[in-house]
Image (cartoon, rainbow, N blue to C red):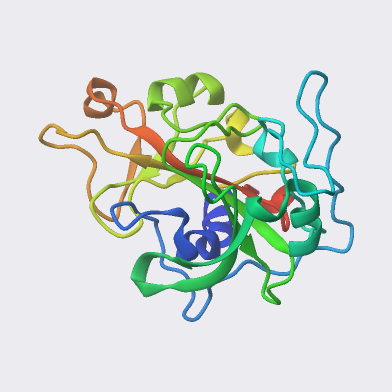
Length: 243
């Protein structure tokens, strides 16, 4: 089934920290798996900035605001040095990501000193190329499909053009969207990536909880919609992430 293949594809991404300790996934990542597979040889090159967007950093290390779409930031063909040249020395740092179930993985962070622009760059198994980009917390970035931090499930339904399924809250992988039900966010094309919801501050009785699948159009969810608190872009093989 498409849903099970998508969850298998996303399991590694979520294991290294895209999903917070308060959020969940339908099945646990394989033991010892902390990074996505190596990129394909036909990796896409970076897009040129859109008209009106600021240019990337100059070679002298000065930085400027990149385009808003997360997909345009990096590709699986990039290296630490190409990103450092593109955005400047101060805009890139090495960091160890801490995820659910004690998982750890080395990675890079773009714009580490700018919380609203911070991007986690997850690496392939060899640790030399990006395989995914992740956004957590308040951010100015968004995906090409319109997914961004703070969207409610009602807004996601409008983007997706139908209701969708997500995992219950209250455990390590809670809130992960598990099935877009064939909607426009299913992403049969490139740049698919996981989306994680966080529950409202005071959820009512009967709110989706635990290792189970729940629909976004259920009455209790419609009454107090959860919001997008984490999302990502899979650079390694996004064309198959939702199939």
